[in-house]
Image (cartoon, rainbow, N blue to C red; front, top):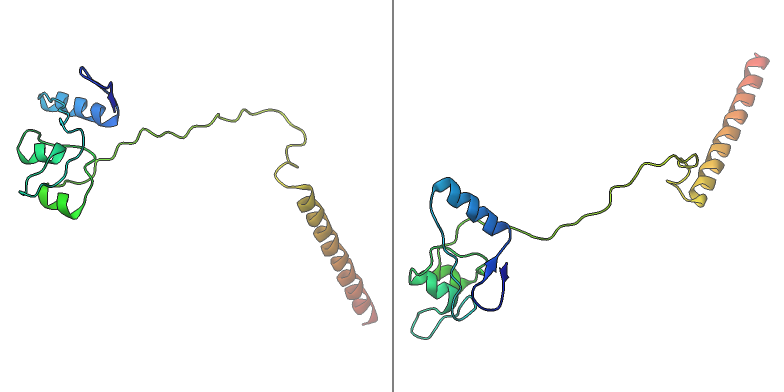
Length: 141
């Protein structure tokens, strides 16, 4: 991410951290160059590019991030595998454990508890009827 509207700029983000680590491991330095046009560039009628893509073609820059892949830019640049960095974070407060005597009731609504009670009652009555019929059958033998 570029901070500031005019030089000296400051930079932050995952890719900056990645380049810092990479340059430290490889023992090289890097310079961040911002295109004068201020955009990715477009193809001119004479076949040259402006902006960031033009800088890459003229060897004024060695690599760039976030260049859109279109049929035109695909012909102009040599794309590598994606290195994706995202600053979006989804966070939530960790739930705190609290003593709650009615906690076992909370996973279901009142209607669901009523339906489960009715289902259990129906199963109990059905088992009583089956037991009664079985007892009568065995007694008659």
